Figure 1 (tube, one colour):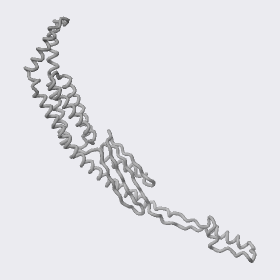
Figure 2 (tube, helix red, strand yellow):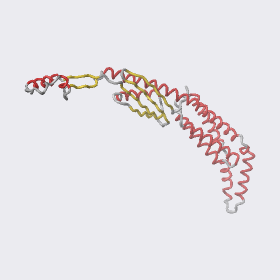
Figure 3 (cartoon, one colour):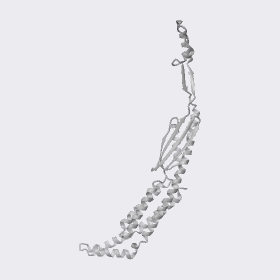
Length: 294
């Protein structure tokens, strides 16, 4: 199973009877799944089914989904109000006309308002149901294309994230093997600090031993290095597993950042601090890319 990004675009078009249909889907990053649909009448009735399809195929992202529906010119029906026409003929027959006025003709009567009505033929309900079903089938097609695009982008992101994790692991190892962490180096720095404290006339000599222990504890970054390694390994395992792992990767990125910050805070050597700062940069870049993962 591969990982997927949360950004993508897809389009699917087709026809159903007199209807020409086209879906456009645009996906961007989000904490959860948010489907925003724009459906014209009479297709607004498919919204619940459409949302269910989004939930089945996607886990995260804001999806802007628009259905464009254009109907071919509808058939027309001509309706003659024969009852009104008969009444008009009867009424005219009772009117005596002078010789210079011609009697009413049929075309003249049909032109009168209300005698003839021209209207669009009512669309069959079964045809509307078929058009809605076709729209949902097209949505499945568009969703498959969107998922494919998100997975393709996710595969590229997986390579980027793997490279970041390798760099994080290498920097962690370099920090572990840093000469500043050798017992001799720690001892020398500790002796220098103690000499400074001991030479301070205002310093309480009874606290000298306690301060020495505190300095030694602060110099130890073993715990931070172990957690950095563990979190990097867990992130690599999630990338290998695939699926919707974005939230868990984001959590691990936060934990990596926390450990790198602690390492920098505890470091009392410039070379170790430099490695810690490089770690923070790599971790931040890793976390930025993780925000795109589903």
